[in-house]
Structures are given as C-alpha cells and as structure tokens.
Length: 639
Image (cartoon, rainbow, N blue to C red):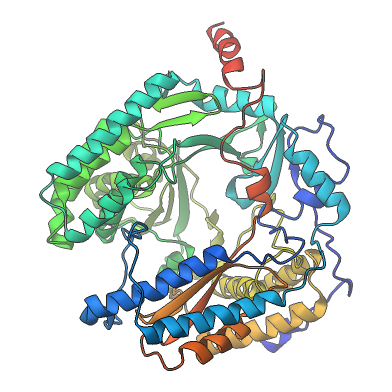
C-alpha cells in the first residue's frame, strides 16, 4: 500500500514459531507435555506426508473422464459447449454414473501424451522421508488421537483450538441443549430410522407430484437422490467470548447435515429463497456492504447515536408454524416477481418438511428438534432472514422511519443509526418482539462494536471505522510449515491487507493493524524476507486495484473459466511436481487441440489437524457415551 507501512520492525530473523497456544477448558486433565506445540499450529495445519505419493489413480481417472466428457458434450451439444457465458447454478450436481465414450483419435492421443508426461514427472519425485511435524509433535498427535477421554474442537467465532474432557463436554451439551424437552425429543434408534425413511418418502412424493419443476430442478433431484446419504450429527462449539458461567462455557449448537438426505430439499429451498433476499430491505450481506453504505452517509446530526441489538437464541425462538406461514406469505407476495418460474408451492412444502423433521444423532443418542428453525440446515439463514424481514417491513421500519437514519440486520445482529425524536429508543424492546423472538438492545452510543468493526461518530458528525478483534482471538494463521500450496500465503496477505485497507478510516489505524499482522505472521514462523516480499507484492496488487482511493465496493476476484477449460485435480505436496511443469506439459500435449484453451491445476489439500483430531461425531467409548449420563441428569433436573 503506502511506502511507510512496508518499513516494518521485526523482533527476530529466525522462522521459529513463537505463537503456539490453545484453550484448555479442562486444566485438571493430564495431557502430553507438548500438546500446545501441536494444537497451537491451528486446526487448519496440513500434515505433510513423509514422501510424495506416487499414487495418482484418482487424478488420472478424473482427467480421463473430464477430457472425454468435454469431447462428448462438444459433439452432442456444440452450441452450448461453445457458449462461454454458460454457468452452473447452486443446484448443479455432477452425474457420476454417466461414463462418456472415448474421444476422437487426435484427442485420445493428446490425452495419452499428457498422461505419460505426468507419469514421467511422478517417477522423479523424491523418496527420502521428510516431516513438517517434529518427532515430539508426531508422538503427541498419536497420543491425543487415541485419548478417548478428551474432545478437541474449534472455538466459536474462530477463536482458536479448544480442548475439554469428554464427560464435561457431553454433560454440557445435554444440560444446555438436548435435555431441554420443550425443544428436543429423544428418539430410539428404530424411531429415528423409521422417521427418516418417512421423511425421504415425503420429499420424493412432493417432487414426483410437483408440476412446477424446471428441467434443471429435475436433474438436481434425480442425481442427488442417487448419492449415498448419512445421518446428521450434533456437536457444540464453545462460546469463549461469552465467558464462564457456573464453571462452564456456553456452546453454540451445530448440526452437521452435509451429505444427509433431507439436505437435498434444504439446498433446493435455499436456492430459491436466495432470489427473494433483494426484497428484504434490512438485509446486510457482510461488513464490507456496511462499509459501503456508511461511506455514502455525510454529516450526521450532532444528536445522532448508534444502536446495536442481538436476537436471543434466534433459531430456537422462531415458532415453526408461525415461521412457515410468514415465509409462505412472503413467497406468494414476491416469488413470481423475482422469477416467473418460481416454484412457490414446492418450496413451501419442502420447507415445511425440512423445518419439522430435524432428526440427528449425538453419540449413541437420537433426537428430533420439536420447535424452532431446523439447526444446521443450509436454508436456515435465509429462512430466519426473511422471517424477521416481514415484521421489520410491516411494523418496525414504517413506525420509526423518521428516526432510523440507517437500519440493517446481519442474521441476528442489528445495526442502526438513531435520531432522537418523538419516539423513545426503549420502545424498540417491545416493538422488535415478534412471535417468540426477543432482542437484547444496547444503549445508544457514539461508538459500538459490530461484526468485525468498531464504528464511531466523530466530533464533526462523520462516521469512522476501524478493525475490531475479539480479545480471546489467538490469531493462529497458517504456519509457514503447513503443507499448503505456495499461493496460500500470498492470498492470506492480500486478503488481510485489503480487509484492513477497507475497514480503517484513518491511515494510522491501518498502519497499526498491518504492523500487528506482520508480527503475528512472524510469530507463526514466516521469515522477515518472506513477509516483506509478500507485503510488497500484495501492496502492488492492491495499489493497482484501489489506486490509493478509498472504495468500499465488495468484489471477489474469481478465476475466469469457460467450457474449454480443463481441470487437473490432485492432492498437493510441497515436494511434488510444480504447476509450471504441468502447464508446460499441457501446452506440448494439447496445444493443437481446439477443444481446450487452458488448464487449471486444482490442488486439494492433504489431511489437516481438524480431520485427524476433530471428528464431528462422537466415537463410542464404553461407559462414557451420552446415554450413560442421561438418566443421572434427568433425575438431577427433576430434583
């Protein structure tokens, strides 16, 4: 960015990782002595295999299929294949059961030449062992992985890795969430299986009887139904920022539904409800959108103040029947106007199934959520957003239109600029109540923390902002030794510098934030030279984009692809062949084939610490499963 910010001070010239810490919520447990040296690397730390694998069977299989699929599509649908504007929407599902026929002799020859070239590169890969975890860390990893009495997970709000003993974790989840009988109902394994089969039949029947489905919708359902599906699982992430109460941390309930059958219906509903979001006047996409909006507000009245509000347990406090009725009214009012083919009836029926059949497991127990928004499902955010919008647009915004200079909501967080007038701000406590939902409203102030921003009104009536960081954030950026591709650090630095540039109104705040960022990177093992070189390169990129002018337009740079783009998918290894070698080989092999104009190498990461130490489901442990604690805890509740 600016010349002065690149003159950074460093406390050392080594690449030793100095920042290695985690949150131990059970300090009485005896842990391996080097636990912090492992968990302090962060859950996203990728473990480097001791030698680069020579097994590229899946890579070659996907490559062959991709080449032949391009050729088949070009011959079968030449107009669509050559249409560079064609894009896949969020409902796209690959057809894994279709096997394309061999391509022409010319294309097959180029494919074989490319494949053989890759085999030659693979044969030269080094076979001497190397690790990015030292011997003590590897031993600690083994001990933690085999320790059935602890649970390791990421804290809520990205505050770092946490460790807690299994018994305390299970009891906390049961006490705070799953034994709240007005919200959750315990099912037997048979009851859960039967009800999930019934849900599957309901979804399929709804789809079969619907006359609103577009061709792409039918393809989505047909392909999704053919996939393997699993039972959703429940887990809780510690809310460290909420502090300790009665010796326990609160947890945020999370239900992992990826790959479950009911999530097919949820994904479909989410796709169409997304089209209704522009009809939500209070919708706030992210903090960058907020920054853009605030930049357009000039010279606030001297008596203007800022107010923030948080919903109290938003999801569980949205009555299901009321919520579905509100969504139904909103869909019938706006659906056709945003999309003439909007499948209103089908979306409402599927949404009802999703919201009333949230079945999941927690260890060896099974539960049904009896009320509230279905936790963990992809459509939940849009559902809750539209539910609150109905009340806001019909009641809140009309009543306070003369005193709301600005009103936006990010899911369950409200930010508004308040102008005193005939109505007192305390009336919001009553007016924001909707159904069972209530809000915690903070007193009007000249300065507030909202999302990742500190926002204040200066003495001249101008809105100022700077980056807000939660005190418990450990700032565990990916260490330099993580087995990530070389572009990861550059992306990390460009992303953070851009973020700081947009967030900080004052240059001094920006410089201070960048200096802290540089020192944190060094604490994570990056050398002074790597940091300085990366900062200079990132600064040039951002200077060219922003031209030293403040702009808050939030855009994402996406790699441009066409239907002539070929993808090569492989697992990244730091000592494997480079992307440059693959690109050179591609040009030699496919240079004369007009079917392809470029190759994109997709590096999939290797296993990280989260994959190894943090499964979403509880593994069975004798005498320490959730069912072993239920009777005792229910008896204690009754007392």
